[in-house]
Image (cartoon, rainbow, N blue to C red; front, side, top):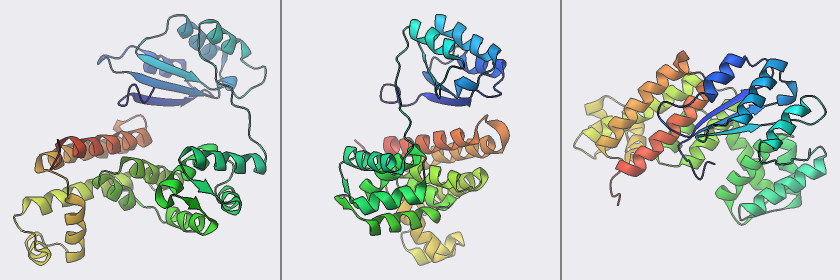
Length: 296
């Protein structure tokens, strides 16, 4: 779905305790005609009214919306799954991976799919470091392959994991400013998982964009002269100069607008601060790609 609709709006909702009204809001037709992806997890725990609402939607689905329901197995709310299947929904069986050996095999498979190889001790070390969360394991396998390529050994896993422990909002901002969408989203997820406050990440992105804009707006490339003019430390000027490469003034102005919207979103304007951050990251990287210097 992401390949067909890269700008689709994502809503991920846990079924347990989900009000029917909130579900109705996200399933309602979009005023702007944009495609949406709605994921309802844990529907085996859905209350009767919510299960009825989902079953009713399956009878008249919106062509501009992709609805995914996740059921963890068992008999509870099994009728809901049967209703979706009868309505023509695609079914993806996801057998539970419960043993350490299965998780190691999963990691090795993900690394192969990304074009790399991982040694048995490295795969075991990654599983030991991250645990049973398959999304995190898949994400780490992909990032390791991107960072190290070829064969991934235990030392690479150790260096990678130490690096993730040091992720901050500024790490995310750095990846955003250089146009590394995949790396920025990876760092954003690591930062969220480690409890970095959404507001701090948004502030770091805004600071990075504003600083790049200030450095670019002054007609000088001398770090010392820029530092004096902008009253900034020389190290920050050099860093901003590096991050501003590939940006145009127009692009940075648009990015500043996105960062301002993000600031309001993470402080309560958006229903999901995490989604607002991911959307802002994608928008800023896209602005750089479409308006940057040397494009076309």
